[in-house]
Length: 391
Image (cartoon, rainbow, N blue to C red):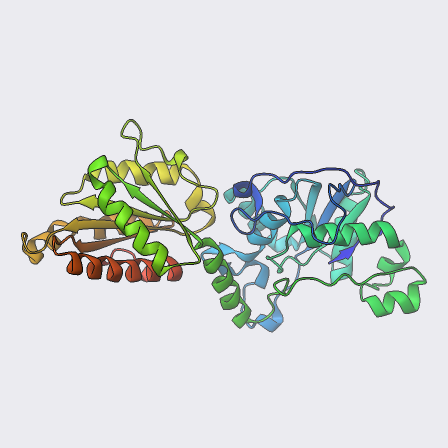
């Protein structure tokens, strides 16, 4: 990440980032502003993402910026991270001619904003130059050059880089001769340069193993919020018990709960800008129509567009009063529904809990159920969608 060859920015002022759902690499990722003056605005800022590489070191045919992580192109996560920062006014992606249409499709599918495209050059530096030319008419004070395959960039480090650019400046000479390396800039360009140390997670996806690491990081981030959904007031006792057991099982995860509004199954009441895991609790019987209404509203919220959403349908039944086989048979519809929802990026599973009157058996069943739910939420495996599990 380097400041581009532009004039120095104006003095900073206060800025509040846009909604996390609209543009963060992770949900509800709030800027800390570490390393910058409180209440700072970095002037007019734009960003250029060189994305013309072929990913030779990745060892796959698909350029690494277009490789999928949780069924979504890697570059989409990077764009989200930059879109979250409200003071970045324009984002230019330099992409090869043969990938131009694919890039347009990504922008449209995932609802990216403030993005324009430029054709990549034969080298990284030419791609950056073409991106800068696309910004020539707007004349931003500072241009940030950011790798398209560094998806975990946060606002605080961006602000520190822009502040350093304001203090130290940069010249056209640097880009003409490709001196983006600090030592080369100091040796040949005769201009002041500064190394801004980034956080440990600002790493670049270079090899195939890095894709798996990126997936693990994203899974961990989007599994930090679980919402226990109760369909009726009668289910609050079981729902709150499950909520408390989940809190103990996942002591670092925020577990919330809500009772569905039967007038419309109002998902908007949920923390939808952060929550990608829903545990729907039913006691004795299940209302298929209410579940479908919930899933439809969830899909309409746009959550599954960005990340895979885990939904676990928990059915509480005293198995001493009802035979297990018929009860499992009555829940087989979950499998066909799960196949349909998987196409919509919703990973649906069923879980049968023994809602015994025996206190010890009840606790054991709920603890085992909480462990199963924790695994489903953390793994987010499409292979587990449609499973009927027993605790």
